[in-house]
Amino acid sequence: MHAMARGMLTAIVAAVLAAAPAVAVAAGPVPVIFDTDMCGDCDDVAALAMLHALESREQCRLLAVTVSADHPRAAPFADGINRFYGRTEIPVGVVRPGGVAEQSVYLKLADATFDDPAFAGRERYPHSLRDAKDAPEAVAVLRKALAGAEDGSVVMIQVGFSTNLARLLASPPDDASPLDGTALVARKVRLLELMAGAFRPIDGNAAFEEYNVVKDRAAAAALAEAWPTEMIWSGFEIGIALPYPSQSIRDDFRDVPHHPVREAYMILSPPPQDRPSWDLTSVLDGVLGDRGYFQRSPPGKVTVTEKGATVFTPDPAGRHRYLILENDAARARVIEALVQLTSQPR
Image 1 (cartoon, helix red, strand yellow):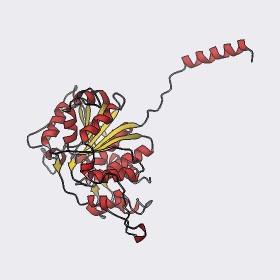
Image 2 (cartoon, rainbow, N blue to C red):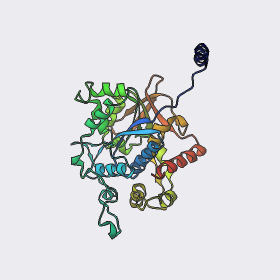
Image 3 (cartoon, rainbow, N blue to C red):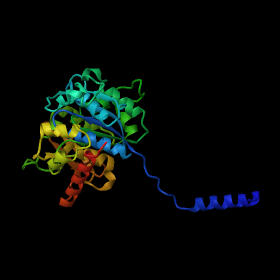
Image 4 (cartoon, helix red, strand yellow):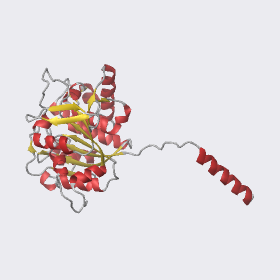
C-alpha cells in the first residue's frame, strides 16, 4: 500500500474509533480479605471454599485470611484449606492475646491423616503453620495486604468476631504504611461485608443478641461506629433462611477422597441435618453483589446495644445496609449458587 494511502487509512480508522461508543471492559477479580473465626461452626469452612472457587473462576483474588478466634488449630486448618486448593502463598494471621477463646469439634481435621496405611500417616490437609503461635499477628497481616492493594478496591469479608478489624482501625502507622488504621481502610477498602447481628425478629425476639456480636461486643460496637466505608450486614435471619442441603454434603464432594468441607460438616452437622448458611451469604454478596442474589435495605446506621443487639436506623446519608431475602424464588436461587460454588471441584 502506498504510504499516502496508508496514512489516510490510519487517520480514518482513528476517527472511527474516536467516535465509537466506549466498550465496557470487564472488571478484574475482586481483591478480598477474609476474616473468620474458623472454629465453632462449619460454615466458615464452606465460605473459604467458596472464595477459592470464585478465585478459580477469576472472580476474586484472596489477599489474606485472618482468624479472629483464639484456638491453636484454627490458623493451621485455614492454611491447610488454602493449600488444598493449591494456593500456598496466601498469608494467614491470627488474633493475639485478648481474642475470644473458642472450642471446636472439627478442628481436629488439622491433624487428620489418611486412613490408608500406604500413605504412612501423611496429612490429609498439609499445612506449613503447625500452631497458631507460628502465625503472624492478624493486624500486621491486614495492614500489609491493604497497603499493597489498589486504592478503593478491597472487599473485606468478616464472618466471625470483630476483634481483628476493630484493632486494625486503632492501629498506628508501621513499616507497611505511613497511614493509621482508619486512614488506611478509608483509602484501600471499597466495602466491608460482615455476617453479624439480626435485622428481623428471631423467634419473636426483636432484640436478638447474635453470637458474633455478643462474643466481642465492644469490638462490634467500635466497628459499627467508626468503620469509614460502606458496610453490608448479613443478619442471623438470612443464614437461617438458607440451609445448606445435606444431600450436597453427602453427594457433591466426590472429586477427592477427603474434602475439608464435607468432613467438617460430617463432624458438626451430618446428614440428614441441613446446616444454616450464615457465613456463605457474606461471601456471595461481597464478590457477586451485582448479580441480584439479595436485596439490600435502604441506607442507615447500625448501632450495637449494651447487650449486643443490633439496631438499624434509616438515614439517607448512612453507610450501612443489611441483606434482605425477597421471596422463595430468590431463596432457591441463592441456595443453588451456594451449593455450586462450595462443591466446585478444584
